[in-house]
Image (cartoon, rainbow, N blue to C red; front, side):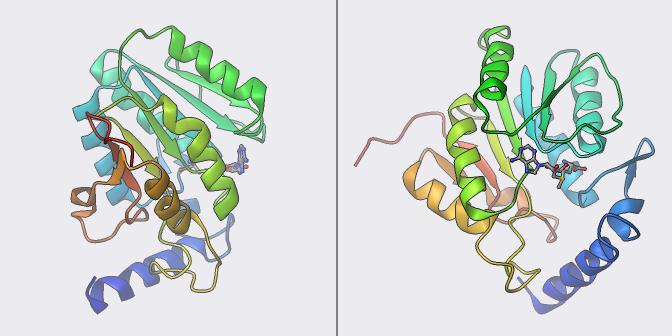
Length: 221
Ligand SMILES: C[S@@+](CC[C@H](N)C(=O)[O-])C[C@H]1O[C@@H](n2cnc3c(N)ncnc32)[C@H](O)[C@@H]1O
């Protein structure tokens, strides 16, 4: 990453987070009027991946106000098929759409995982894609990835958001988070590897976070 890209990334993120959930660019990044905590360049990558994969089900961990959920639902609507199940531990006002199902609870709570499994059972052999944007602490990310990765179908994606924290290149000193969890997860699950071609717009909140599941499982060591 060149210095100019790194500096712009930091500048953008500082502006996005100033005032935290109050006044920064994140609170002014609106999808159909709904606050969406994403870099728009990543949303374009989402659109490209969703078009390629044509998932029957997207599982989103971390809904917040539902901006990213509605974005995905609109892509699925254009494809003419697919649902998004979005999980958050908080009840907040969110947009309705007939291709969105909201679940309230912790990502790893057994009743939530069971509800997701029930949704998967209804879609036959259609592709499943997972987006992680919930608790960004190392242990929780790793637990979420281990819980939800088995749902990802070969050739589809497990997108791990905000791998840029802890100095990659923002929030130096944040502590081990999504980036470090991804490194460990990919060591343990070599069928998932970062698809770095998804970082083509130079700035992404998800460096090494677009994990593609290979079509054939690597032989175990
Ligand atoms: C970064 S926000 C999600 C942003 C949203 N995806 C967007 O792009 O606008 C993270 C959300 O995850 C929720 N969350 C954090 N830890 C969680 C957990 N263990 N289980 C479920 N939800 C969690 C938080 O309450 C918060 O609403």
